Amino acid sequence: MSRTIINHYQTILNYFDNISTNASAESFNAKIKAFRLKFRGVRNVEFFLLG
Image (tube, rainbow, N blue to C red; front, side, top):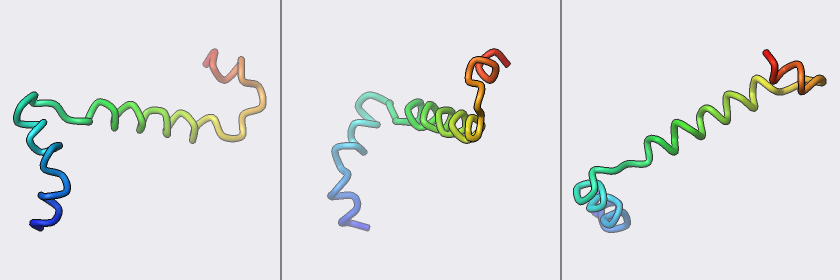
C-alpha cells in the first residue's frame, strides 16, 4: 500500500488542492464506448445518426 501511495502521491495531493478528479473524463470515455458498441454493424451511418 505504501508503494501505491508513493507512486501516486501527486495525484492524491492534486485532489485535495484542487478538489478535482478525472470522473468527467471517465464518463465521457464511457459514453464514447457505449456509442461505438451501439454503432457496431451499422451500414447506413446517416440513418443511424438521424435516429
